[in-house]
Length: 96
Length: 487
Image (cartoon, rainbow over all chains, first blue to last red; front, side, top):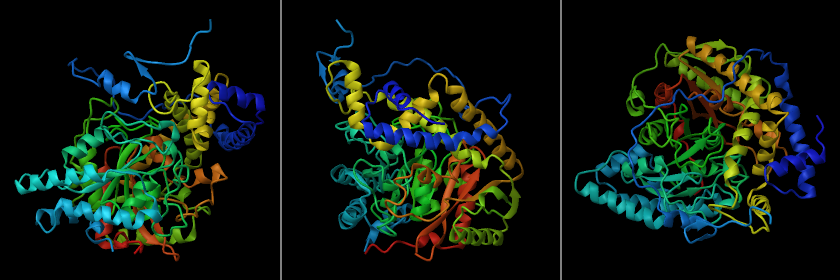
């Protein structure tokens, strides 16, 4: 299946990536090749088959709620790109 | 000469116990070896020599007080750089984690510390474990100690090369589609991808959460059991980890294998398989038959669909997991006028080509309009693939496959063709998709003196049964004793 440049750009936007012209072309072509390769799945009869999202035998379970110290604000702040007055700072989120 | 750095875990443990060597001496020998060969191999991204020596001193003090913690006490171990070690930079071989120093230990690290292990440093990998050659590292490729012009495999190529080059006694890797087993095969090591749920993933930087497992890369199978035993077990911090019953690996490894039945799928032995790999595989089969193992031809009709399923499921999960790298809480941030621009600039500058490729693919197959056509179909095919394997393991105690279609390929040979690169994991990806254990060990060498591996695949939580089969094979053969000649 052929992917338009616009489609690749829209996917990149959803993934929060800005791609150069060269990248758009390269990834578009590679995405197409990979999607062509996985097309073979269409040959499989999968009617009525349940999807497998994970293979863990673990099921939901409860545990006692024992309060314990976690990471401190200082430890978390120390790894943030910008941390001031107890908060992680980010650029403007809402336009004026 | 590698000296004591060439020891296995069990050999080192014996020498430490007999006080023939101290942990400080062993650790110094490993770092001397690192200094001698690392410029040629580039297995490590970060060395922790100072803390390693302090850990070794603490181990020697325990031993002097006759209170060692077990077979790993004082033994130098390398860690793949996608696991968090408190106070040590974690990069995932990506520029997007620039400056990230984890404030906590992964559960496997907590467990290794409790076992007294000495941590040598963080090893190279394909960026975010996306790859099969370690060429996708943002910090340059690792080289195969058996032939420096060839790849060590990947994504745990740094861990595999470190162990093969005696730059660590053993190492931890992680495996999402073959990332422990394929480099083990290409570097002549034992590598175990444990049953999903056996090892806690807490503190492992996630690639594909339904497939990822941490496991050992070691010089022989006995070491594999020792290291696996140290890291496995239920963990409150990982809700997919499982409470294990059954014998621990170092006990399960004992006993003979007479009368066991191994299945070989006819779909595995096709034209795509290198003749030298095929010859080594047939030789290994004959050696196992001498031990009383029986073989049965089986069929796994969905084998050809495993790679397509994997390359839908893994990128889909990866694109979700990598959404967290947005420049807000840790790692790289590139300034932007508003938050969307900051996200885009940060992610575009921080991620290398393979993460971008997988994020785009994963986002595409999860996006509205394509979800049913790709992702959902892959999940259904995964169900059928799993049924195939579970059925095969009703009549067989375990399965035996080649580990890789070819021995190590040349650096640069497959970098321009992602699909060709993906094909090197053809024998390993199914095992993650179906959640079973897979153990790779060396079973021969090519004429060019490159290691060739084979893979045992077992029932869920029968990791110990695989270790036993592999251990008896190693008792009867000496492929695992060969070492590369790095000088």
